[in-house]
Image (cartoon, rainbow, N blue to C red):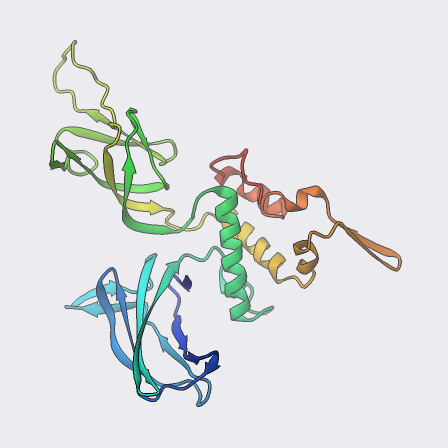
Length: 302
């Protein structure tokens, strides 16, 4: 999936190929953008970047105004549906692409003097996925609802770190149970385990010696957990590790490691990699910076 960086002025683009050959459209090319079913960029005519190149671009706003209210386009993580409409050879076409709005783990400004923006985007993307695999979690932020299945336990393990819990709902005997906010009329919700687990307890207004205080998350019941997930900002150790990994990816000698090179000898010098070069992220300093953010320290060989 194509990506756009959160809170950055970015453009969507499309190239028209006919049998692998770039071909200009024979009509106006229009583009519109939807986010979560809401049209955030209305249909707009987009000119070709240069005749014969058949590439069309549209710079997206970071926010827009709908019915007098400010709506984020690139301010939050999520998926944008970008729809292109055009005519080629008398035939009408409509193409919809998905763009993922993601949180970059290190800024372009840090690398702007040493590489191109296109190379930075590609290397940052790869570094981010290396960190995801190594740590077992993501470090962006998203306001959404996750469906989590109960397993008959007193606590509910979450698929992602939860910053702020808003509501938990589930279906019981055909009815949707809505206990309210973090503190509802019948439940007190707790975030524990460094915000990776929630528990619920009944509010005890009187002593009842035969009442069981254990409230289980029942098996085969799906709990819809709504709130703000992830991190409000990328943790500093993760950002520093990302800078190191991006710099490694930009290094011209990177191709040696990617070929599983054991050693190379030229003249009076020899290059050899240790076995640890292919464990973790491939950089020992980055591994050390990320060790406190790994969910499964015994796993992570890439």
